[in-house]
Structure formats: C-alpha cells, structure tokens
Length: 105
Image (cartoon, rainbow, N blue to C red):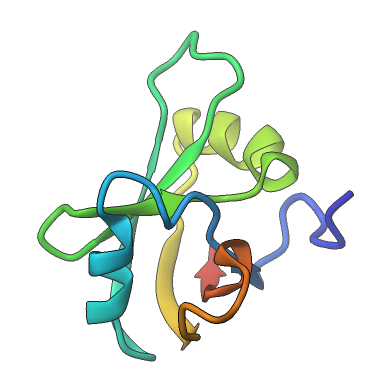
C-alpha cells in the first residue's frame, strides 16, 4: 500500500510502466526539473490510470495503482495536478524506480 495519503498537496512518486512501447527512450531524454503532463483514463475505465506524458505528448508511463485509485477519479471530477521530474536513474535500476516525479495539487 502506498504511503501517499489521498489529497496530499505535494508528493514524490515513481512512474510505472516505463519499459513498454519504447518509453525507455523518452525516459532517457528527461532531466530533473522537466515538466510533465498528467492525464487520467476516460470515465468508466476500470481500473483507471493516471498517465504521465513528456512535453510534446510522448507517454512515459503511469502512476501506481494505489495513487491511481484516488487520483484518477478526482482528476475526472475537476481536480488539477502538475508534475515535474525529480530523478532519472539508469537502466541498471528496477524499471519502477527509474523515474521519480513530484506531483502538486
């Protein structure tokens, strides 16, 4: 279970799914401080994910299931979040730990 409490104003979280569909190439282009775009799945998608996109639209991955469970519905109801890259680690690190972002409400 995530240690991030629902409704947290600011939190750091890893991005999942960064190794699929050439997303690793996108991760390699990212640097700390780069702004990211957060997009929830459409309504009636279950389970709904919040997708992380690089500027320009390339998909990077998605947030953890625990965070998605509350954040996706809140975003669909109008809540806005911003995100930026905190840390990018190399391919020698587990994929779900390579990219850490800061999310702000």
